[in-house]
Image (cartoon, rainbow, N blue to C red):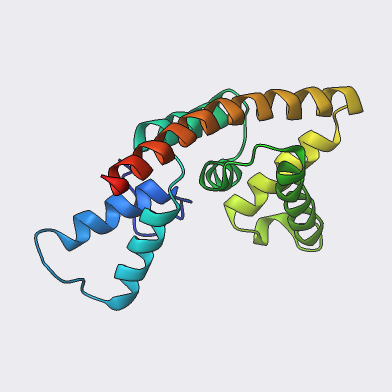
Length: 161
């Protein structure tokens, strides 16, 4: 699990949010605040992968694909498997980068600087390199999507029984 200092901002996948809230709740039968319960329920409902697979995918995206954590978290939580779904994320990256360029880089939060640097890396690729990068990324995501389908099917069977 993550060890964060008070001043550090670190994007979290839904599983990390869920585990953090479970730890905060402890043995209590009630949440301290209603918004904690709503966030927990959202994280629980929209997890597409089991925890080990989600963390495994996050690590692959960061270490093998060199994605900034903020982007990798969004990909893990949304699990895009088509080029159109992935394009939505890349268009958002482009928009963030364009907005970030309007400010001094030193004024930007570190995660926005990470997105800007990733965008610049992608933009420096040839069309063939970009296409290959997206193809390999989609292959990885589809591998994990298959695990997501098994998880969904397993949960559906349990609910029916």
